[in-house]
Amino acid sequence: METGSADKRIWTWVSEDGKHAAAGMCPGSAGTKPGGGGEEQPYDDHGRYLGTVGQGGVSGGISGGSEVRGKVTKPKEEAQKVPTTVIWKNAEEAHGLKPQMQDAVQSMRRDVSKLDSVLISSGRREPLGAGDPHAEGRAVDLGRINGIPVAGLETSTAPGADRAREAARNLGDWAKENPDVNQFIGPKGGWNKDGKGNITPLAPAKQKVLLDGHKDHIHINVFRK
Image 1 (tube, rainbow, N blue to C red):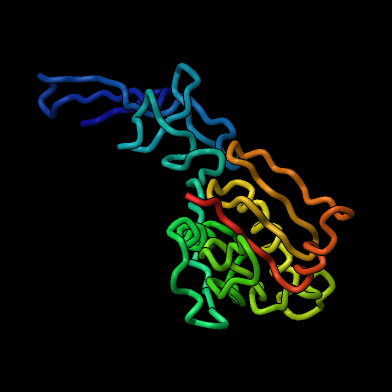
Image 2: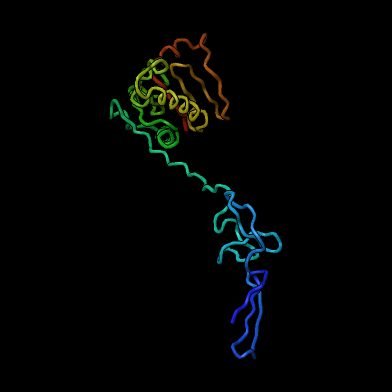
């Protein structure tokens, strides 16, 4: 026979013949107070919130059962970039590029954000003059960015033009960091890079002819090795 007391956590038991008896305390709460979500939560004699069975028991429970206060989010993994699609205006000009130029093209495809596609309007070609990097297989010209002509890109209102402009800016930043690239010229100007990575902008007054010749494409040049 079980009996109770004023404190519902204390229990007693006496056998039917009165020869045996026992008493103890249930691991219940000493009261309740507002817990997670503003709901009343039981607490023990030490004022600690009680967890559910298997979630910390009487002495180390989690307020609100297994629910943890505060939003827990896993770090968001950045989606891997889809390699840029490269379209050659003249497929034969893809042959004969120097290894460092090939590496630069692959790096561009892999690393330049928002660059979905490029049209390479010129690669390795017959010499236009002494020291022409295209003849040496050390240069490529980009005529389109994400399908939009480089000529007029800055003012284009075509669908995707904003993304293409951002891709072009990212392309310029990438070229500055790429160790193989030593020259970058486009409609917005250009620069040369020395072997130590120092960049010198092309002066419009002194290199006007050179700059004027790159209003409709982006020229990327790599070092000799």
